[in-house]
Image (tube, rainbow, N blue to C red; front, side, top):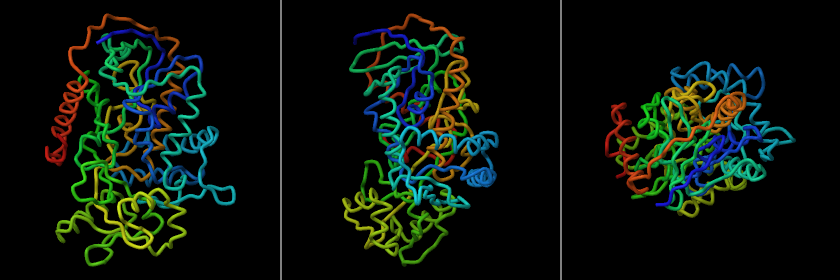
Length: 436
């Protein structure tokens, strides 16, 4: 294994919405290195369908705050939720400056509604908003001469001196790269790849969480794990589950049990809808319920949900003519590495953003379409904090030993560390939920 050293100002581990948006909000005079564990497009951001929540105007801010708190069972951080709502419009406008094409009607946003929102306040781009956000940010990143992207690169661990983060150890093409940086940002995504049944990219296995646990960095609310009510049901499917967006129910989709009867208000918070579906599944002994939108009409369905229509068609279901078989699947990690409202962790010069972090915004249950917004707002706040303070930080180089383990062994150990900690902190999780 070859070893080399490089110096940068900022090291960002993760290429989803929070990692790239953070990089784009950093000063142009800073040397930034962004890592992607595989290809830059293989992120949960790319999979996000529904849209991005935003306060529609100043009058909507208190209502947006209340909807978020209520969905989170009032276990949220009020400070973080208030920031999310008040600053939401700012970051939507920033995306537009980058060229993001949101759906509009007569030059105004075509707002939609999803579960537990009191009004229509979600902006979107058809039913593949996350993909369009990702492509917008990737295209903008390629224009920046100060940002370098390493694909297929794994962050093995951070480098530290006392309680100060000073860089990271990478593996790329079987080469050990020691990166010395003034600041490190963990944007490594969620934990869905640890579960047998998840809508997440399979490569997302809690890498940031493993690093935090190994380095005694504070965690928060890691027992809060969201299961999405409606993932496409396929028997014996071991791959990533196809998400059927909450926007489908927001546009009027009806959930039907084995008798063809509605059994729940489809726009209740996700945890409540999930419990109702599981109750029907357990009582009927049929492993799915059905989600019907056929009554919306073929033209509307194909226009509003082109990706879902095509993906379901590839799986043998024409959603313009028949209901969709759905069941719950692990979807989002509300907990994570504890951060303040500037995304700073308990270790100096180490930040965490996106799903790997816990700002306290989501509480015990995430409000629909708040995930992309959180990734935008708090990664920008991290960048702004770094821009103000990085001139007071110097690169520190220390001697780093050669890695003793191969990548597969490191990743296997990380998975065990995270799964054990998740089960230790939650009575609702057991080994059968996780893949081996």
